[in-house]
Amino acid sequence: MISSSHLSFDPATLPTQDSYKLMTGLIVPRPVALVSTVDPAGVRNLAPYSFFAGVGSNPPTVLFCPSLTRPPETPTPDHPDDRKDTLRNVEETGEFVINIVSETIANAANLSAATVPPSVDEFALAGLTPIPSEVVRAPRVAESPAQLECKLMQIVFTGQGTGAGVVVLGQIVRFHIRPDLVENFRVDPERLDAVGRMAGNTWSTTRDRFELIRPK
Ligand SMILES: Cc1cc2nc3c(=O)[nH]c(=O)nc-3n(C[C@H](O)[C@H](O)[C@H](O)COP(=O)(O)O)c2cc1C
Image 1 (cartoon, helix red, strand yellow):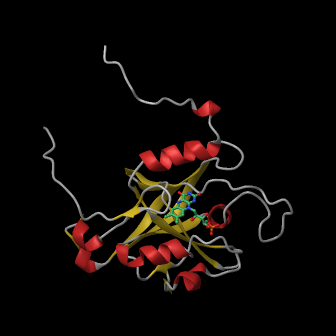
Image 2: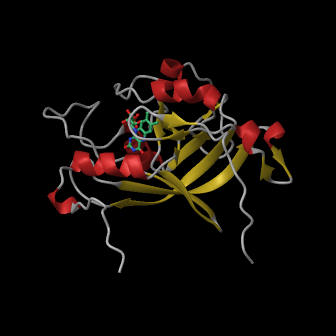
Image 3: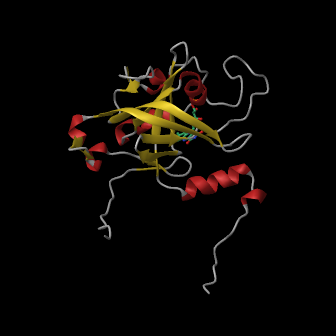
């Protein structure tokens, strides 16, 4: 038997914040979905989400996770509950766009994470350009190398209270990719230059890569 010198933690005994630190430090690098939505009145919203993954390709399905926040002590029309603006917009409109984040727009994506009232246009805040989508009402980010228009499939709540997970599952209804990035549906990772998020304020590039031949 191999004895382990690993440190072990039972999450049931940990503050939520420590589980969060372990998860964001261990599950790395995470791709960043810059999610654009609109509210029912058409006000734009933009925010980065790194709990983001592809789920399946038939139909093409993605997920991202806007976790619950601390409920406001005094609810206002702007902040009525513990949902982030993105989640509220997705629940109310059933649509969103995932904009892929390259290094060129990493700083802008980060700026859009500021906690501001829903009435603030985070495209303007981040200095990014909204362009119309083909199928959904939420706009795309023009500067993003690729955008995925999505229709909401399902929302799964994995807990209650601050930090609880909310899994938003969406079906991709349109892919948009800068023409120089793709040939015969294969994406050039060098040109895409996607970034990832590590723990805290640390991000990573995708420039240091290696190949492994997959066994038959
Ligand atoms: C790179 C990056 C990744 C983030 N990933 C997540 C995430 O996966 N889930 C989450 O709830 N918040 C995440 N955040 C924080 C949200 O972006 C932030 O709470 C934002 O204000 C939410 O905006 P909204 O209320 O307009 O949706 C992330 C922030 C940054 C900078």
